[in-house]
Image 1: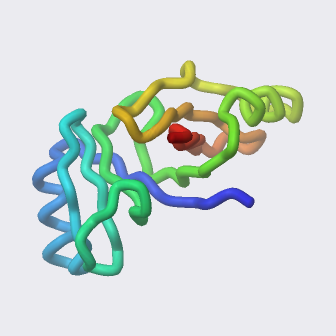
Image 2: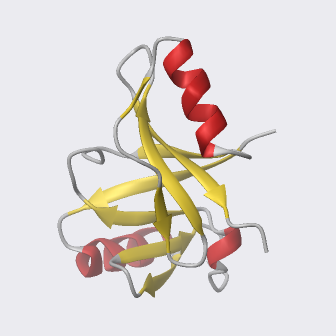
Length: 119
């Protein structure tokens, strides 16, 4: 079963982080690779069990996207291509946490696959 999170793009991560803290009471944690992890419950952030994150706006993340936790990005990417979707970038390691890859479904929606690093 896949676990789903969300990612919100921002031009200014500090400004966006302050917005979500002040408006909704969400907890945030800045990571050293230009990303903010957040929790919508207001409790201290646990990066491995967070609600989602705020990322720099880029070619793939122009609007909020779902992050879908999968067992294997490589296997899921193969299925995506076989069923008419497309991958938008190569699998990338994200710190010591896991790997990500952006995909486009058959309807043009952008999503992010997430595979945790097994320790």
